[in-house]
Length: 181
Image 1 (tube, rainbow, N blue to C red):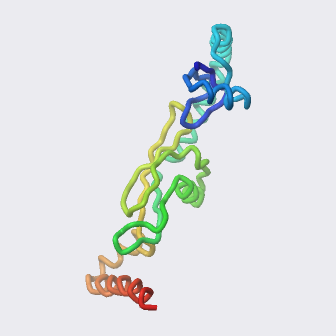
Image 2 (spheres, rainbow, N blue to C red; image 1 turned 60 degrees about the vertical axis):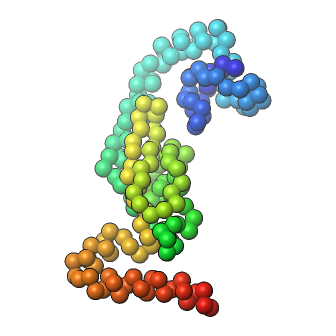
């Protein structure tokens, strides 16, 4: 079934896009809720005329999206999470977590605009923020073990290796004492 979207629907398309969906999804959800209309020849003509008239508005929306994207240039996110001895997170880092970290930096982004797979191990990843169908920004996401921020790791490396080695066994002993208790 071919329909015209009346609003952005994540995973399906953007406003004024003509997309194909399964008949039940279109008839039972999209059309009754007012999110789409059937793409008849007359509806396509009306859409084309509306797009011609709204070209300057669409350009303004695109410019606003690019301005928002500029705020994220050079921004990276570091997330601290509890980690097991094998390096696997207790839980996961999601788009909501990334949105919270960006909010701490003063950048408000809706979590629904952030596209990424759930992160379940320590390491470096990338999250994509979609502001407009033509404006997307990739943000590097670094997941660290709790207590091992970049600021804490650098001074330990500068001093000497002995304090870092003393710290590691303490972390390993903690789970063992919990099992004994």
